[in-house]
Image (tube, rainbow, N blue to C red):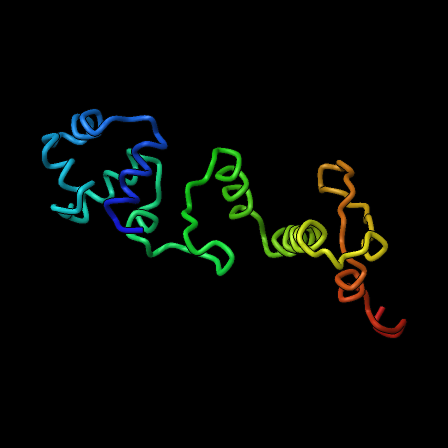
Length: 154
């Protein structure tokens, strides 16, 4: 998808008209229309302004962002809940990211692997520093990788 197409998609996702975006950016409607038709290219400052205004990462507009093999046309428009999860994840220390990654990997496998058997999963209790208790789901394989292989390692 081209920059012009990504821009139009992002604008429409925000429920804005071309005129509204042009007004908010302080440019003429014809200039903005040129961006969406591909007849004009905004400079870097305008791309940053558009990204902020349209709540879309600039790399999505420029198609330099992450795309998966499964979703070649995916873009990175995050909803508010996903943004909050990313914010929290980035605040974690090394231990916290390892725990979250283990749970995420186990849940992803459970939800996407048709060969995954529920008997291969283990519910492990997790106690936060605050004393709050929760259970996490982890595969037996991942659990074994965390546990020493023999008693001498304990």
